[in-house]
Length: 228
Ligand code: ADP
Image (cartoon, rainbow, N blue to C red; front, side):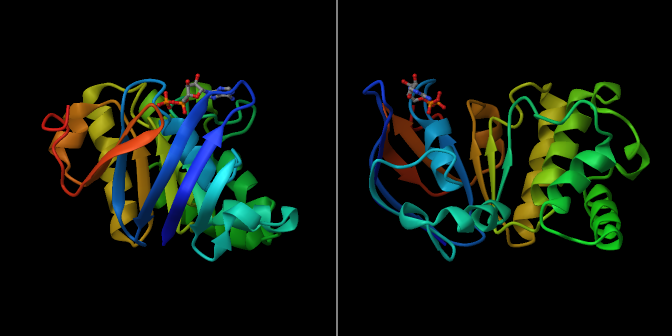
């Protein structure tokens, strides 16, 4: 469960990127975050793993009171909130296997556990045969699948994806959507920022619409066009 109560984020330059948002997201929901560029989508999503710190309000993510979290608890919050980016952010000098393993190594898992889990997630995203390739030897869609595998390696409760299909062609975008929906089906909350109205209309889920940092609509199974 995610609960925001009157949450705001004002950056040091004075811009209020997230403005007084109150909302609740239940475990297992699939939620789109939409809105024009600069409306606060990325900031909203970065608040969830405390990459950005709220300047007002209260925020609970699962068992964490994010507004008051202690530094030593941060790694645990981040294990519960996996993140995926538009530009994949894979480490270029590591293979697909090593990129995913890296996320697990920091948790103190044994070599055997790591190997088992990496193979599990590679299977899930259908890329077991590309395990030893480096990112630049993979297509954009394949890189994004590896990035998703890395994000779910620690079995997070929440997966945050900021424009995950932004750099991909429409067919590949659909494949990525299917993977996100499969992950959601297994009980993970998925929160996806997107500009892609086609996806939002094809695959109906709850839609949060931001404008100038404010939550201006919150529609279940909403149609992107209707709220434009
Ligand atoms: P979106 O993801 O919808 O494009 P962002 O959350 O990236 O929106 O940005 C919201 C607003 O906050 C914009 O006006 C942007 O310029 C500003 N902003 C984003 N990040 C920072 C930052 N690190 N410092 C100052 N202002 C920022």
